[in-house]
Length: 246
Image (cartoon, rainbow, N blue to C red):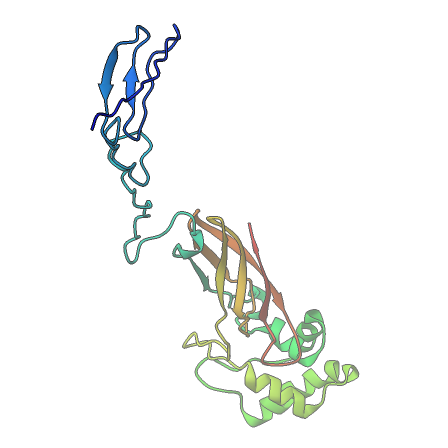
């Protein structure tokens, strides 16, 4: 059986190629057969891999790990956290007395009695001090108390209160022992690597003169000035109420 197959030719002058995928024929502009494909005119193209930015047959972009920060060593100081820097506040001294008081803490005694310092000094001028090796005799002690009360009674000072205050602030001049006292403590306030202030953690008590305060921080060592408070209460008399950085 003979089958006649008719083929329609495409003769346009601008045709470059026609590809018939399903069993078609590719023709050139001069009507000459270029190629025939049984089922596909071109080979399958490999699929593009995920993440490929460079086109066909390119390797995928490498996955970069996020940057990590170095771990500071234990015990080191972080420059961005100056509060970790070592700092200290040293409070020393503060138990000097006026030369005219011969070692007695008159400023503390007067404050505890509630009278001006000069009033107690006036009262003490009538006193005959005992020697360093022994206390006064009973007769001498009575004479001294009479002299003191003569000046202090108009200020409301009783015999009992005078004894209480005198005994609390009694000292031994020979052994250079001071009266009862409490040592003050403080810490430095550090902001952005600079000492900006001082926090009083214990105001102390019994200071008769300004103590020496040395502050050490990240920005160096310097001194500070204490402000003292004098009250009738033994626990707060001669305490540090404020510390000012010079």
